[in-house]
Amino acid sequence: MPALPGFRDFYPEDCERRNYVVGTWRAVARRYGFVEYDGPTLESGELYRKKNEEGAEILEQLYSFRDRGDREVALRPEMTPTLARMVAAKEKHFRKPMKWFCVSNFFRHERQQKGRLREFMQFNADIIGESSPEADAEIVALAVDLMRGFGFGGEHFVVRLSDRKAWMDFLASRGCDETQSRAVLACADKIEREAPEKLDEKLAGTGLTVADLRGFIAGGSPAAFAPVLAALEARGLRDFVEPDLSIVRGLAYYTGVVFEIFDRSKNLRAIAGGGRYDTLIKGLSDGASDLPAIGFGMGDVVLGHLIDETPAADAQRRAASVPACEVFVVVADEARRAEALRIVQVTRDLGWRTDFSLKPAKVGRQFQDAEGLGARHAVVVGAEWPAIKIKTLATRQEASVDQSELPALLGKPGAQPGSF
Ligand code: HAM
Image 1: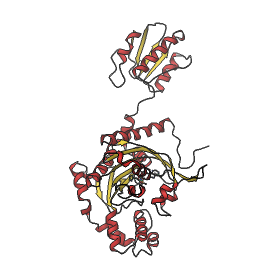
Image 2: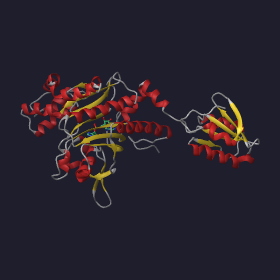
Image 3: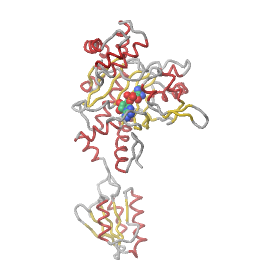
Image 4: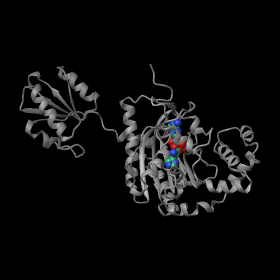
C-alpha cells in the first residue's frame, strides 16, 4: 500500500538528502546568531481561524478534525501562528530582538502539483521585537546565505522584494475598503499564474482590473526599499535582490516588507517566502506589548528539486555524504570472532562508522560487502592474531600490523588516517 498522495516515505537515501538540507539550514541560521525552538504539531483550529478570513486559502487547506475530547484541532499548516502564540505567552522572558529559527514538518491539503506536497519540511527564521530596516535586511541576508550555503549563486536564484504597505497605500488611494483590498491582493498574488480574464472576474466589484494592477506593479516606487537595499549592499548581497511589487504574499498577516525567492528560470514555485507582520503577536496576546516581527519560511520540496537540477549544488550535496560504513572488519577465521568483535568496538569507540558480517561468510564475500557499503578500510582478523591486516580498499594497499597499533594507525575520523 503506498503512502497517501502528497505524503512521502523516507528511505535511507531520502533521509540522507533531508538531513543534508536540515543540517545546512541549522548551520547557516546559527552563523547568524539564531536559536532553535519548536512547537506542537497539533494546534487548536481556532489559532488559524482567529487571524484568517473565512475562505482564506490556508484555511481551506487545513487538516482539521475533532479530537476525542471534541476539540476542533488542526495539523499545523505553518509556524507563524504558533510562534506568535508562544511569544505572546512569554514575551517578557526574552531579550529583544529575539532571533529564533525552527525546522519542522507542516501539513496543507494542497492540489497535486510540482513543488507542493501535503506534508513538507519548512525552515522558519523570525526576528521579533525590532522594526528597523536593519532587521528586514538581516532576514533577507539570512535567506540569501541559506541559498549560498547550498552552493547556489546569483545565476540560480533571485529574492524578489516587495512591500505590502505600498500596496495598501495604493488600494486606499483607489478607495478600496478592507474586503475589496483583500480580494485585490489575492488576485495580485496569482497574477503570474492565472489567466487575466479569470482574475478580472474576481476583481469585479473592487473597481480595479488586472491592467490597473499591472500598472501599479510597473510604476511602483522603489524608495520604500532604499534602506533595506542599502544594508544589503553593505554586506555585498545587493545583487541577489530585485525590487518587484508583483509579490504580495498569500497570507493575511503581512504589514510591510514582503519577499519570495525564485529560481532564475522561473520553472518552479517559490522556494521561500516571508515578510513583516507587526500586528499578529499583539492580536494573539490580548494586549501584550506591541511586538513587531519579520521572518520567512523555506520549504524542502522546491529546494530539493533545484538542488537536483543544479550541477554545482548537487555535487556539493554528494560531497557532503558520508558512507554508512568506513571501516569493515573482516572475520577471516571464525575462531577469532571474539577478537574481531573487540576490534569492531575499538574502531567504533574511535568514532569510525564500522560494520562487519553478523554471520560466518567467505572472506571474498565479506570484502564484497565492504566495498558495497562504501568502506574505506578493511581490517582483517584471522589466524595470524595478534597480527591483523589493514587494507585501503580503493588502492588495495595493505599492511600487516600488531592489533595494538590499530588505533594509532586509523586515528580519528576526519583526521588523515595514518600511513601503513
Ligand atoms: P509560505 O509562503 O506559505 O509562508 O511558505 C513558505 C515556503 O514553504 C514556500 O515558499 C515553500 O517553499 C514552502 N511550502 C509552502 N507550502 C508548501 C507545500 N504544500 N509543499 C511544499 N512546500 C511548501 C509561510 O508559511 C510563512 N509562515 C512564512 C513566514 C515565517 N512568514 C513569517 N515568518
